[in-house]
Length: 508
Image (cartoon, rainbow, N blue to C red; front, side, top):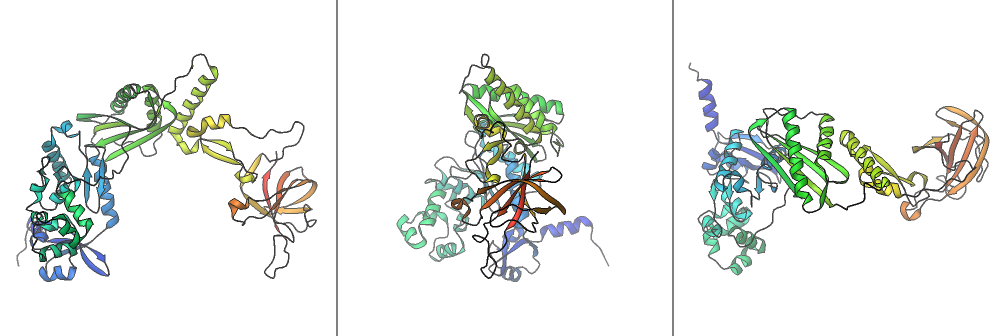
């Protein structure tokens, strides 16, 4: 009995055709396949049973759509180093708009080879092409790779490709072949009205875009920032000192670019591209437009120091990018003479630093709301975006010499209390139980009736009667009865039922 070596077994497995299948309309069909399977005549969308009949030794794997989407998204993040305009073309493709970017990599040919080689080293089989329209480039990648089409040469570049390269669907592809149109050039030679009448306007538009006659705009994953500056390194950087110095220099360049147009940054993002393809992005926001690089440097230092998952350089970063995704026109003010403006600037800077360290949603200001419903009377909003509104807000003034009408501490949700008996129909309780402790009522103020806003609550909320209550131990509560006796609360038989009672807050 003889045995083969490990290398021979690995080579044998590599030569075996492999496919990935997915369930569609209660049948397993080919979702992806390798070159060996493609050479056997298998194709995407073919039923698994037919594929096994053609190749009994087929290696079959189940598709993992979630993992595939995550991998495609990670590759798209890595491709951000070439252009900020990267769009997904599911399930397996990407679009990169490299207009104005190719010269940074030595031209289109050098950029294309760099991308193919880099992804190939990570174990991916890549088919890429450059063309004037996205549909033409996608069509080329289905048959050939490494093709660069000159402007106006789209029709000639794809004329000899089979009609299946258009990706129009199995039904249309079969119909074209039955009509004797086997190549894209055959289809293009027919009149547009003939193609539209037979195969529909959508296919005619697809064909026109593939031939370079117009193009469908791509939908980038991320909106294009207002300003972008970046630094590439021949030798990757990995130390905190070099990262901080790079961010500082990029901040100087970014501020200089915005200053020419009188802009300041409100949202900034630093992206760190690792040599192994991992991309880490860190974002900071500011309450007011930033016009000084020292402020940007300080905010990112705070953010980096507070990261729960520290910035891991791995084998180093070969590119760092700083972008301003949100900017505003800077209004010049007399800041040196106006003490109030100067104080506001210092407060805004303090809020920005705290937000960079613990998160912008955790630093809030409170704004009054035009409602009499107690739990809706105050809105907690991020301080970075609502500081000016909070400073100008007008709160109800307290009557001098009068006790407060609202408690110092208001619960997020009213807590139920047990009231054995109360004066009906709208009297206060004589005692109540809250958190398993009994309280005897000795003093009462109220009731203060608050009707719910029916135009907002759809009539589901009941009228409340609030009482300011003091017990025998001197504790003061804000208690309300939820619903009017004999008016809003009834049992299953339609008879008046005792309303529920709640404690909504505590007075100091």
